[in-house]
Length: 195
Image 1 (spheres, one colour):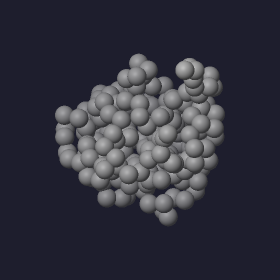
Image 2 (cartoon, rainbow, N blue to C red):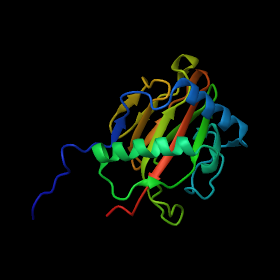
Image 3 (cartoon, rainbow, N blue to C red):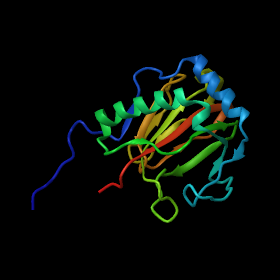
């Protein structure tokens, strides 16, 4: 039986070299996110529900409709397609879900989790790539690092407007915010089922 390896160019964590959004664009997204109905973030049951669990997640979220920020969605999708071509190589990728504006207050966090559910009854949408884009100025908060369990990697040097893309099946967390408020924009991208 032949041994098959993934191509050497592939990786499952990729950060943009420079910020995707200007500080002005970041502020516009924060203002839009705050103007929409905030809700406590839930855990479990994929995209179809879940429950509040302050031992696993403390943050508020809102969902940004496509029609309210179409230029933002286009800019992010274009960048995702470039990143996918250079790092992931997944088939038929596109924007499949609304962007989630997240606000982590002091003490806010999200414990270890994956963005793709292993119970496909919970999540029929195929999530392959996740993205976190930092909207806050890093000097506005302390803590709140994005960490990856599988790679033992901690991302604590994102610039305002910079994004990190990663495979949705990687276990990750947002460490507790120690001071200030951390705002981010989270998105998921999908395509045909992995095979």
